[in-house]
Length: 237
Image (cartoon, rainbow, N blue to C red):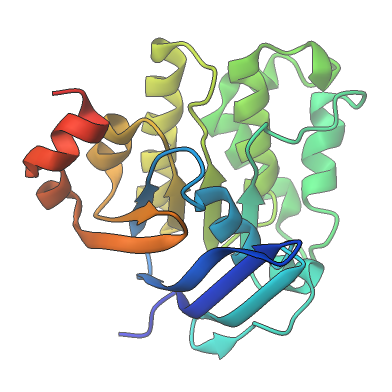
């Protein structure tokens, strides 16, 4: 089967300091894959490299069999990769509805209206706040808006960077339930960077563990959940 997303020998650096070392990973069509690791392991840099917003980058990024390594970031978006960065990245001075409409700005053809309605079905709280300035939303609502805006691209692959960061456990559970629902109903492949390993491994099929810019372990999410070293280091058990 052709992977929906694949990286080969992916490298990245900041100011000449290497932060990614020959990363190889796969995300199959309709699969959720999570990336685990401590702070500074290179997880965020990995997503930036895939999206080509990491300036110093090498290696290959393959999307559904097509090499997109040389494409600019905006072209990668048009090929179906939506990136929800850490810190949410909403436009705080714009309304919720304006943020959603901007999410569809690069699309060509019909379907944006239907996708907006579907995004609001996933996040009904946003429907109640369409005219509200995004910067006045709660942290959880801003994360919901960031994901909803990404869905406006009708992506084939959704890159999520720490969607649980700074949120209350109840909101985290709600957001992860919706991520799983999006994956099941739309068949969207998801590459998820997450510090909360316990909840990430509940919805992921497979996982990769990164340390100092390298993949040091990979396998089925169930194997990670049952690994004693992973339990002690990342699951608090």
